[in-house]
Image 1: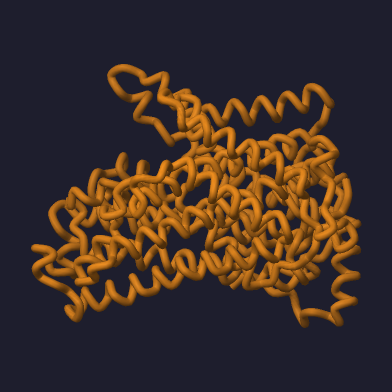
Image 2: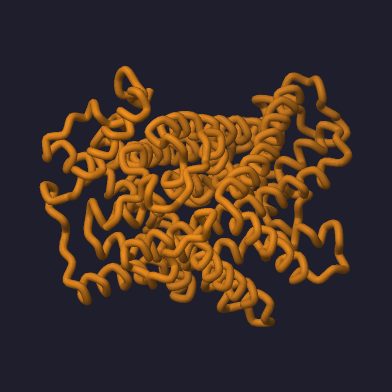
Length: 509
């Protein structure tokens, strides 16, 4: 397999600020702006906070694991490459197609959601018009250069970050009694609302598990930094910096937002259970802004949610295109997808991803949208499978690195708490995956349709993995046979060329 460094073709145009915002933009979206209300309503504010903290810890370990591998071996399509090099060629093959499918279908989902959001302002314009327009915009942003993608993602993410900061400031002002309008609610913000009724914990363990699944999906997208690693400038510097910054920003935004929602909106407020893009007025952000006396809160949040949707679609187009490109370079997809334009963009992979995303979206237009719903449900599991792969790859990478006699001090970034970190992430991720729809098994009548729709992603992944293994006879790579020498030598050359970019290896603190 080829080493995806400077000479391979992809342009290293993404700066540290781009990498930070790419991960923020990929993970902060409708999961926070809409579904956060349902988490508070289901398990209470205390249960929601605890769930965000637990899943946040899991994502922390996954991000540091990914950061260690990506800083050492920055490649485009990192999950597929790491799976092939550190585990088994068949595992990397399945990981690559799994992740490509995840984002290709997600783009279609975001296009459908964007058309619904635009209906808020333009109720008489057919939704397919907006979806086609937004698909064209996303395609154009990814067509010309990676810098265009990075800049668009930076500014879309900036809008979301500004909104969340404003929400946090206004929320605390309401809790302190500065901006609260009594006419807008019969509850005064504060600890009494947080402890209201059966709060702060509601529904017991069943509710907590259910909420953890929603929260896990909300954090998905942080792994985009690994996909973008191959096109980042000075990856040994920028990736550790970005990994350290983005997670704490994301966790701060989520935790403080949930705390404010729990202190202002009672968990049994019926509006919190409405978490669909068709009702932006039920967004907990909209509710808090309106109770602060901001009349334009619904229009403001509709614009922010539209930005979040387009940002996710833009990130999805980038991620799926680079994954398809990486698989082509590693002879796991047609070689045609590995060709680059003069500006270093894998346009053939972009064409294919755009077509698939458009076809998936069109399935939602039929009266019976069963195909679309199956695609949506099957893609839901794939993000967790990708996370699971990160934990497995890091565990084997670190063990191979030590077994082959390399010095951990040479790593540009070293994840702490090994092996606890990847093992904890693996166990919790597996628990969430398997428990995603456990209620279907425990009901009086087993819901086989729901079970198949929820878990179909697992047998699809196993089919790809075992099918490739059966056809090509690939086996688990022994730790002492994992190819690290070339990447280690390249790392040393990069360090010398950069004039010694560190006095000591930056560990995660």
